[in-house]
Length: 421
Image 1 (cartoon, one colour):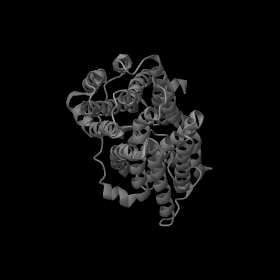
Image 2 (cartoon, rainbow, N blue to C red):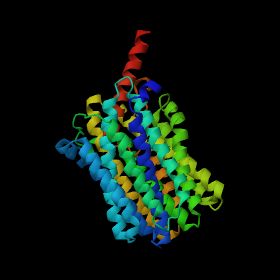
Image 3 (cartoon, rainbow, N blue to C red):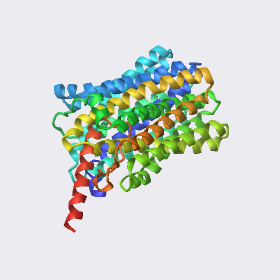
Image 4 (cartoon, rainbow, N blue to C red):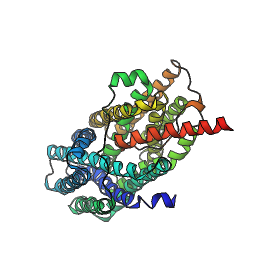
C-alpha cells in the first residue's frame, strides 16, 4: 500500500487541504447564518445553491479541460473558489450567499473532475481500487478535520473564512507541482433518466432520495445546531460525527454488500438510518444522544450511496457504466438540490427538530421502496454481482465511472480465479 501511495501522495495531500477548506465553509454557513439571523428557509436556498453549481460543474468542466487543459482549469477554479470564500463575510445577504455558493459548488465540482482525472491516470488496473479507497479516506478525513479547525476562531468575524480560503489556495501547490499532463478527460453523456429507471428502478429512486439526505445533513446540520442553541464547538462536533460515522461504517457495510442480497442491505441500512433520526428527534436535547444519532445517520448515508452504485452496476454491461455513472450523479444532484429546500421549509413551519423528521421520512421512503422492489424482481446471485467500492457522494462522474469499471473487472477476475480452482 505504501508503494501505491508513493506516487499519488501529493495529490492526496492537496485533496485533504481542499476538503479542510470546503468542510470549514459548509459549517460556517450555518454558524454565520445564525449570527446574521438568516431564516432556515433562506439558508436552505443557500445550501441548494452549492449543489446547483456542483451539478453544472460536473458537466461543463470536461469541456473547459479539452479547450485549455487541466492545469489552467484547475488553477482558475481554485482562484475563484478562494475568492468566493473570502467574500462571504463581506456580503452578508442571502441572495449574495446563494450566488457565492453556486460559484463555489461549480468550482469544487470542476476541481474534483480535474484532480480525479490525474489520480485515475496515475493508477493502474492493479492499484486503482487502493488508490480510490485512499482518495475517499483523504476526503473524509479532510471534512472531519475541518470541524476541529472551526474551534480556533469566531464565526462572527472574517478569520475562519480567510482561513478556509488560505487552505484552498495552498492545496493547489502539491497538486500542480506533482501532476503530469494527462489526456483530456472524457465524461460520457449521462444516460437519460427514463432509461436509467428502466434498467434499475431502485438504484435511480434510491440515489435521488439519498441526494436529499446527504445535502440536508451536510448543508442543514449546522443550521439545525445553531437554531437549537448549540455552541460553535458543539456544532462542529455534530457535523464531524456525521462524517466520522461514514468513515467507520463504510467497511463493514461494504463487506456485507459482497456477501448478501444488496436490496436487503439497502433496506436494513435505510431502516437503521430512519431509527437513528427518530432517536435524534426524541432525545436530541441531550448532547451525547445527539452525537450518537449523527454518527449512525452519517454512517448509513455514505455507504448507501456506494450500495446504490454497486446495485445499479449489477444490472449493467461494463460498456454501459460510463453513461449510467453520469446519469446517477445527475440524479443524486437533483435530490441534493431539492432536499435542503424541503427541510428548510419544514424547519420554518415545524421548528428546528423537523430536520430529523425530514431525514427520517426520506430514509423511510427509501426502505419502503427497497422492500417493494424485492417483490418485483428476482435476486441477483451474489457470485454474479460486482465488487463494492466505497465511493463518496462528493465524487465526480470521473471517479464514479472508474469505480464502476474497476468493480466489474475485479468481480470478473475473482470469478475466473474461482473457476480455475
